[in-house]
Image (cartoon, rainbow, N blue to C red; front, side, top):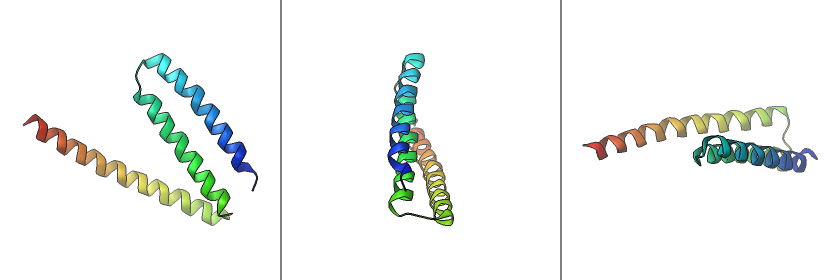
Length: 90
């Protein structure tokens, strides 16, 4: 497939411009890192799809597995951070 270089450059420039806009608007760094993580996820998923030359079922399974993984990690980290912050308060 040929779409990977186009996807890579597109994600880079869109992420770069949005990161500048977010930093200019909020004057905080966490929205920029959020934008970087989303761009990196899209870039990595596109790379895996392109390198392994996956069909429709393969693409859907990669996206579903990565979505489930990130939902589980988000849930786990939210509980771990909340528990850690509660211990620091007491």
